[in-house]
Structure formats: C-alpha cells, structure tokens
Image (cartoon, rainbow over the protein chains, first blue to last red):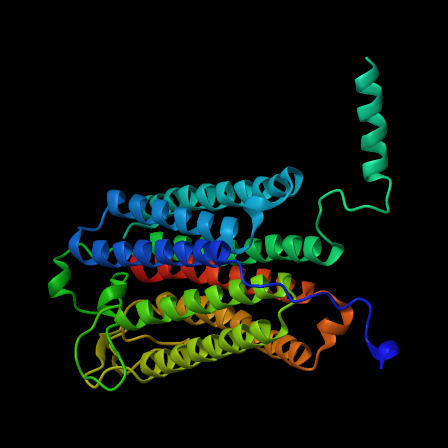
Length: 114
Length: 251
C-alpha cells in the first residue's frame, strides 16, 4: 500500500479561526456599505454630492474586495504596483472620457440646438 | 559599498530565473494581467454609458412624479421596481438581493481558497459547491429581471413620433424601450449581458474545479492553487457587479 500513497499530498491542517473571522469581518463591512448606498439612494437628493458619495463608497468596496478577498494587500510590493498603477490609468481614462462626453453634449447643443 | 555590491548580486539572482520574484506563480500572475485587460473592456462599457447619459436630457422633475418618456434618461429606481411573487412597488430591492447573493458567493470562494491552503479537501469541496450555487442563483435572478424588463408593464408607453405616427410600446428590446430612450435599454442589455456572460463562464469553470476537487486531482498534485486562480476571476466578477450596481442602478 505504501507505494500508492502520493508523497506530494500534504497534511490537512486545522481551521484558523482568526483567518475566518477576518473574512467574515470584511463581509460585514461590504454588507454595511451596500446598505448605506441603498439608504442614501432613497433619502438624498440626486446631484454631485450623492454621486461623489457613491463613487467614494464604491472605491472603499473595491479596496476591500481586491485587498482582502483577492489577497493583493498581502502580495509582494512589485506585484501590488504592477496592478495598481495600470488601474490608476484606467480610472483616469474613465474620468477623462466622462469629462469629454460633457463637452461633446454641450457642443452638440451649440451646433444643432435642442 | 560592500553591501551595495551584495544587493546587486542578489537582485541579479532574483530575476535570473528559477525563482519567483513576485512570490506568485506564472498562472496567478497571468490571471492578474488578464483581469487588468478585462477591466479595460468593462471601462469601455462604463464610458459608453456615461457618453449616452450625457447625450440625453436628465429628468429634472420631482422623483415621485416620475413618468417614463423617451424625452429624458429614466431614474433607475423607478424602472427596476419588481420583485418575484409580490405585486408591490419595491424599488431596487431585487437588485440589492442580487448584489448580496454575488457578495456571499464571493465570500464562500474566499473560504474555499482558505481551505485549499490547509489542503482540506472536504472544506474546499463544500465551499466550491456553495460558490457554484450562488453563481447559479445570481444568473437565475438576472434571467428573471431580463424577462420582466423585456415583457414590460401592462400599460406600456405611447410614443408620438416626429413624423406623426403613434406607437404603443410594451417592454424593452434593442429597438424600442418603454422605460426611456432606446440607448438605456441597449446599454442595459449589453452591460448586464456582458457581465452575465462572465458569471456564466465563471460558474462553468467553478463546476470544473469542483469536479477536480471532488475527484482528488488537486490532492494528487499536492496544491489547490487552481482554486486560488479561479477565485481571483470570481472576485473580479463580483467587483464588476459592484461597479454596475453603483453606476447603472444607483447613480
């Protein structure tokens, strides 16, 4: 029987309650943030302030998911920057395009009228 | 001076091959860079949504008096008001539920990865199964929402075209839309559809991984790293939904 036993198979380790607790904590944060967004959508008037709050909360949620769930926070520094830096360019791309779209809309109204 | 030389040698050895300078395997790194490129694709969709939204008039009246019209962009909370089995006005409740389901399936995925680190086959199997079920539940919810969106309300919307014809529209498709401008429905189908396709492929991949866990493939390999890789993909899908939820349904 001994030769069929695979030498690579590692021992099963017991559960680490601290790790599970950390995961559940992040889950709780995500749930609370989503609930806050939900409540704000109905209680606050629409405008730049509400949109900014939504964007901010979305970034906090992104930080929790990417940092804890995808484990990026605990990776090597070079890997963290290899992901964060291009992401920052993507964020800028979105922002720049949205600003551009505002100008486009104004230009269309100025040229064709509405 | 001496220490500088030693560091240089160490650096050369670090990047000369045979070791993992980023302390992550090739497969995991490539998954990260694939996700970056996928983020670019979704950004393109998000930008087109912004463009379309700015190109239409915003609704300026009181939100409670909102009535659908093709003249202005709709308020999403007045469009997605349905929940299954109850005929009541429940704005965004169903979408909130879908978000919750996807976040929970993300959590079960983290637990599967954590169990994989401990080589605990039984736990990995259990949490992978829950993740698959969460994904299927999300897809079912989305299918239901699409059906409601496509079927439309009983009253429909009467549109007077500039050329004098009067159309009575029920529901939304890629050509016409009773809830607002045509672009609103088009982008709804494209964005949630593209995300849904990601979820579908994620569920299929998760089923394969679950199968491999159950039949002991990773136990024989001695590493549950594949669970980690599909975990990254699954969390990314969850993350994209967080953005879709904010920018499509809330803002």
